[in-house]
Length: 246
Ligand code: 13P
Image 1 (cartoon, rainbow, N blue to C red):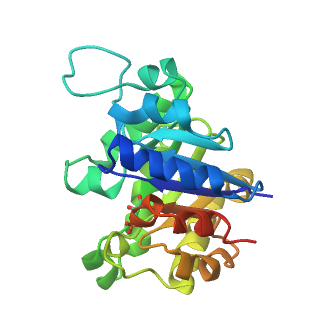
Image 2: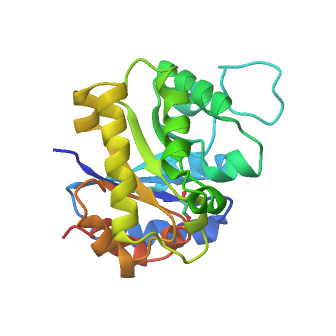
């Protein structure tokens, strides 16, 4: 039984006063206790948030580098997150890949180093619109997943986030059928290329314009194990998304 997982990716948003508002609605909830809830917070606010977050919500960084320390101006490492009591990191988000030029190879190295350091990882994959229209969705998500699989020893501490780029921040959510199709293809890929137990146990969550209005229908699909929520994670409707299975 895969525990339903809902991540809120705040991206580069929030002031202390806005964060206080988000933490207030997370505290009020109530959040379904059968759901693992994690918020992805800008680095500068990680400690601030950690100190005020209710203990039924966990916390993630939004990026870490592929080594523990050194001359890498502007970067932070998994060791630094752990030193501050932050257990999770989001890696390979499409904004990191497409705006900041992160390759499959770099994302995979970051995932491997984060896991070896002891972080848990939300690893993001997903095709662009032109790739979907060219019939390349499977090829792209398999390529992105294989790059990671080639570098890691265990998927126990990984949640895979399937986020079609055309659905992110666009209001064009994948239909439950579109998302389910890719999630099932990914599970089949894991079965063939990793093993049956990983295929059975790894959580594959969906991201891209998830709202309180579409979360319930998406959550009914058998291979959708939760969500990675951007814009709506800054709003009180995030509570309804967490509770989509109820
Ligand atoms: P939106 O929910 O704003 O579309 O963002 C999705 C996302 O990128 C989460 O990581």
